[in-house]
Length: 417
Image (cartoon, rainbow, N blue to C red):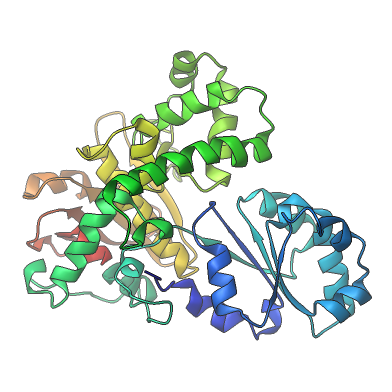
């Protein structure tokens, strides 16, 4: 079943704009970049740079020939032939009427050729696995509504009132169904096919992890031996949402701490993980400064760990953090993401910094929250250098609890769906 994408709204605003003459789509393999571009930019001629019979021909085209033959084109897996970025740049600079979409399966495209050659000429669009709101759509043409979090993001200083219980939400059953699926299989588009069995979905995820190692990491890092990387991948999946000690992880897999940091960067730029730095704007000796690593898709976590079901509290935290992260990125909001922990026990799972101030999040797997669960959210403003706009406790509790004017406990599914 086809699912709509939130980024369509962004693309529709950009594609006919002068700053949308070159659109760069990056994201993990199998997140739907190609399907998206072919569906929503049908006037763009699709060119696969992985086609060995045509690569050589593309690289010989002059700017005049690109303008004549392909004035509007989508170039898929362009990182396979970085020299083509220079061709697109030359064509862009010489002809005002050309438009291109460039697709790549890792941020290496952004970090290298695009950053060097197309700075100021392109709009960058990250494509992630499906969000909870996207999972609730039934076709490419559906409009993806804003979640409660995205509504807040559009007006961060406004007050948002939640129903006293998620049960009263008119779409509660639909949201809960999508949430249950999301907590089992994650958000990769290929898995939403209704003809698939659960067993086939798990098999697809295992194949995805193997393909990621054999193709993406080989393309990105050119590693002769994949075993140390595979060990790190498994170690980080087992420690998702936990503070990472590079030396300890390095000792466990038999590599150096520098190698661990390099491998984590590979995971980040291939859209498998996101690293949350510790918040430390004001220099405080009491602050723990090590980062947290979050996997961006729980289906992938299960495949890496060869497990099914039995979500841990840390895995739930990563799933919620990654959904907040994806929904924020889909709006192209200017936001920074942190965690905060002090040596004396204060811990905030997620801080989202906007120009207007911060939102703080505590995330609990429980179905019944209490005021005690908000203890880390109290007096948080004392640490921060901008206003604390609001604090949220997200869990599986269907009841909404207003613990103070600045602290609200709400169902994670309600908040994100």
